[in-house]
Image (cartoon, rainbow, N blue to C red):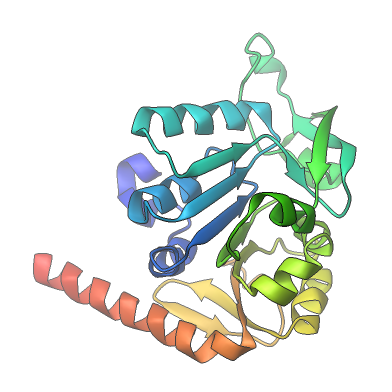
Length: 252
């Protein structure tokens, strides 16, 4: 989709929000980085930012690492760790398709700690992965507060956030988060409301304020902004969208 349609081809509503935010952040954390789309864009647009990418799925991890090498990015710290609500070894469910069994690192779908969600792509194989909490990792590895946090862990985002209370309370990052229908929206909503975040749904050309997290039928990516900077951040994103649209009209 990216090859044929450019940046409008894949998760455009969220990427439209991500671009102006990552240009202004000092630390971006990509949880569930997969092949690294957001991490790579962050490094390209803001070489001064520290980027931390977490991906426990070995097949995805190797492509992200290769892309970092090919682009000679120095600002991305790559971690083959999962983030969860506790530290230690945990069971992770990896999709496997018989058609690709001869390929050790095939990437047929995304994995998850949630076997039900993982199985939506077909048969899965349980593996052991190392996990830590975002609070623990931030305390030992970060020297600046997280400004932007992206979560896409296939319905376990609330579990990641259960291990990130200190980050949400003190770092106050803007959070970009996939919300899958019928999975964990209520748990996520409770976390963000407890930490006084304003909820938005990312839609093409608009960041829509919502009272509840939920799937709109077409758009499932959401943006959570600390209440104290919600209006300022909303205005920044709107101004960026207007400027980009004007530039596209002029170019055409």
